[in-house]
Image (cartoon, rainbow, N blue to C red; front, side, top):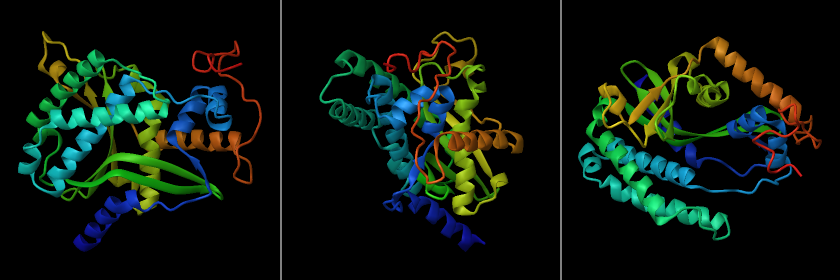
Amino acid sequence: MAKKIKGLVKEVWESKIKQKPSKNLHVSYSSLSTYNKCPKLWELMYLRNEVPFTQNIYTCFGTAMHETIQEWLTIMYHDKVKTANEIDLGKLLYANMVKSYKQGRAMMQGEHFSSSDQMTEFWLDGKHILEFLKKKRAGYFSTKNMMLAGVETLLYQEIKPGVVFKGLVDLVFYHPNTDRWTIMDIKTSTRGWSPEYKKNPNLTAQVILYREFFSKQFGIDKDKIDVQFFIVKRRVPVDAEFAIMQRRVQEFSPASGPRKTKQVIESMNKFIKDVIDENGKYIDKEYECSSPLGKCKDCCEFVK
């Protein structure tokens, strides 16, 4: 059994480099989420390619924070905790933010999307987050009975002939003592997620879909897979009455039982039926905006 688990963990770890070129149509959580938000916006983005790529300080910071946490944890779990503790995370974050900014500018034909002062502000916020994580590391990322099994784990599963679900899981952990897995998605937020925000089904569908296809891809029982959003907060109240409010991290595990999973899968199947034909191609037609006025706040600036 131990040998089998070791092989499975290795398979999960190596999955990020196993994708082969494919002519299949890729369906992702992002495309489903966009369609559920506004079919017209989905049409303009995925069918017409009329929505230009835009980078901003929030996506730049989010990408850099993801990479920094992933690099730090990879060294911690696959090298030594001591080595990980010696890393200057602020310096690493700075390098990743510069890289992310340059990549964003290149995709926007050299256009600047942030200022030096704004970049510095976000970097300092991120530095505080990472200092908190380093200090409280054992509470969030224990090296006892917890293995880092995947970073940017590629999910690539056929939904129907010619159509494949594609997703990248930020972090995957395996817990030998309980024989359970955790799929973790990192999110950056200004002040954390409110109770109302957590109720958004379009948001929580992401990790539920990842759980579904992770289970199929690696042959792991869904009942042994937990899902979690790991939310890092740029801002916390200095004079908070309760210590919990000063935490830079918010952990959220949405409901992912049979009923919730069924709802998400039904939503995915409806999306596929609505936009993909029998030959695995997008149905080329005019899609309606979700607003009764014909233009919602999501698609109005792109509708001609």
